[in-house]
Image (cartoon, rainbow, N blue to C red; front, side, top):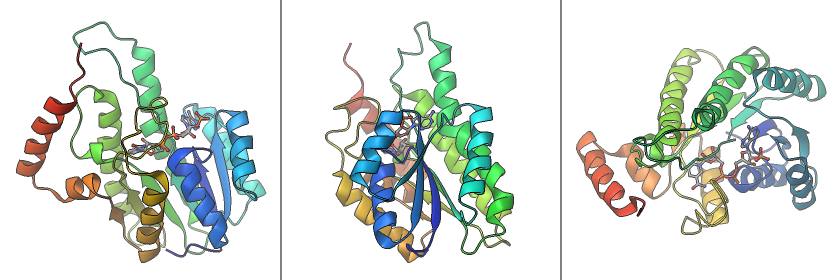
Length: 250
Ligand SMILES: NC(=O)c1ccc[n+]([C@@H]2O[C@H](COP(=O)([O-])OP(=O)(O)OC[C@H]3O[C@@H](n4cnc5c(N)ncnc54)[C@H](OP(=O)(O)O)[C@@H]3O)[C@@H](O)[C@H]2O)c1
């Protein structure tokens, strides 16, 4: 995929991986529109990335998704790329304990419902564009879950599955469907400090841009590269080892 002359909508583009990719696309000569819920974070991102366009939007709300698509296609009629990057990661109480379902429901709405619906809303528009693409950001945890974040991992596994179906259904169209599968990356995902041990953000973003430019349809990095290419037997071994190592101490 070319990195310049795109007009890109990136959800969650005001922080972390989204902002790191946005900066690189802007630097390469693309127009990038970032959306997120926090207006002050959008403004901060615009200071860090001059030229970045910003629209406040909560992608978990169906009506806000429709309004976002209406506005972005009106204001940026050349929009040819959707990057479904926005995500949250909750660490709920163990499933043996009483749950606050609203937090699980909202995680599903943000991580799964939103990318599915935004893709569907934008397909008719993308079909009219040159070099159209949809990029879905999943996770290495789509391939092997960590049990104390059951809903997060389920949303990412489901988004991986949806991405395969979307790519298949669009195979005879010009729309390229790309899955970005990050490993743990040092961002504020889930709260400050929880991903400090992850891959440095710039290292990951540089790698991701190179793989996007190469035209790869699915790519990971380190843990997630290994995970997405592993056999079921290997994944079962990783599942056991990872869950024993990272089980929360209570
Ligand atoms: N960091 C990792 O280790 C890692 C690993 C694998 C996959 N990923 C995936 O990478 C993506 C980006 O995460 P990140 O690590 O860069 O974390 P991040 O910095 O917390 O970024 C998440 C972004 O999503 C936005 N967002 C969350 N809920 C939203 C909503 N309802 N509507 C609109 N925007 C919303 C947030 O902005 P607001 O809060 O302002 O809305 C934020 O800018 C996520 O899909 C995540 O699951 C991350």
